Length: 350
Image (cartoon, rainbow, N blue to C red; front, side, top):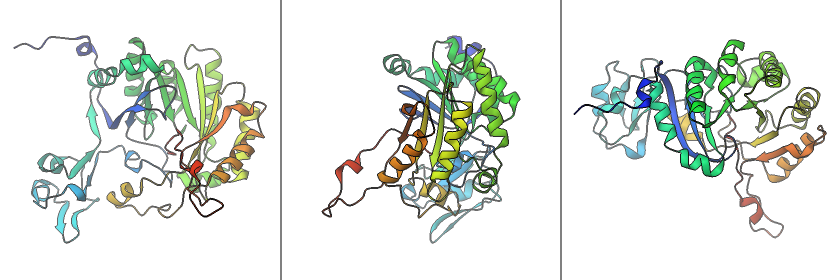
């Protein structure tokens, strides 16, 4: 039987490496959103919640709770990068090419390929399945990562097709990109979620692998671009609050001062994203020693103090809010203080 041709079949363009498509997200812009996590990032933040998104290349991981010990993955690997030892499957990351042969051969899905090639038409078709949720909640599509600007030509084409179908679009970026990449994507992004992590450039290099001058130049470029463009029409700033790194009064005050001087008339929201340590297993499966594996969540008192410091820098303090989960602390009489158990909508501190 001949396959009926659809409008999506006329969409041409290269494929992109996508880590994950997350539906029903409330953390990546307004409303209910479908977030597409693209692989590849120009930064390598020490606290990254999605370490598997930093490399542009596909990677594999072993999920021990699914493994039945059949060794099919070991036999299937063309690079001989896998071994089965007493502790389970061991992956030689130097030899692994991320081809996914092991994942294809695994009968129990214990070997998982992190990164899949998506043709443009297929990806547009996939995200438009959620249109009903977007229409009811005023949500839409968010291109995240990693950082979408690493795959700028594809992301620009993807967001353009989404806009053509009446879907709200958002670009979630760390800001460490070329001007050319931004110029490709911005005309097709209804809003931008932009990270300002650390104001001191040397500290920024220490924690993210790169200085922040390009990032600051790019946020000012976006500000100026928005003055004369139809899109983007909305800008949010996001700051991850990382214990021992970014979560200091000095850093938050410095970012607030920069926003007050350069951005306050442009941004709608400054989101302080509380540290999240739920990604420990991701680092372990990738064979990475995570610097923050033992770092606790921040208590509500610290989050409130940092938010107050941020608000104190702005003419409109109402645009500041902290998001995420605070650390559960003991109440005055030794029991858990219930108000600390509330999980607040928030970003993933990438």
